[in-house]
Amino acid sequence: MKLEKLARFNEELEKIVLFIAEDSQNRALEFYDKLISKIEQIPLAPLIYRQREKSKDENVRELIFKGYTIPFFIDIEENKIIILGIFSQNIWKEDD
Image (cartoon, rainbow, N blue to C red):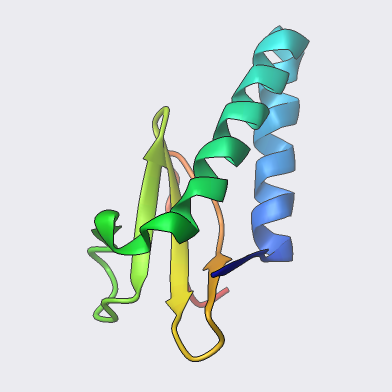
């Protein structure tokens, strides 16, 4: 399966990494590298991740990483995983 990251994910991730970098650039880079590594593993077995509780679609799943939730969509027809966004304790709206 291919992996696609929406612009929304990239924008949200950039804000998180910049926030962490205010305290430590090394921690920010480490966080980014480890997160991307975890995301790149999703296509190997996407169904092992839990279904997003707020979605009735069983193809909307989420990866939990260091307190952050990364929702993604398994697009079976296009044979790809779409990374939708990333958030912590803030409310994330799927419709944006």
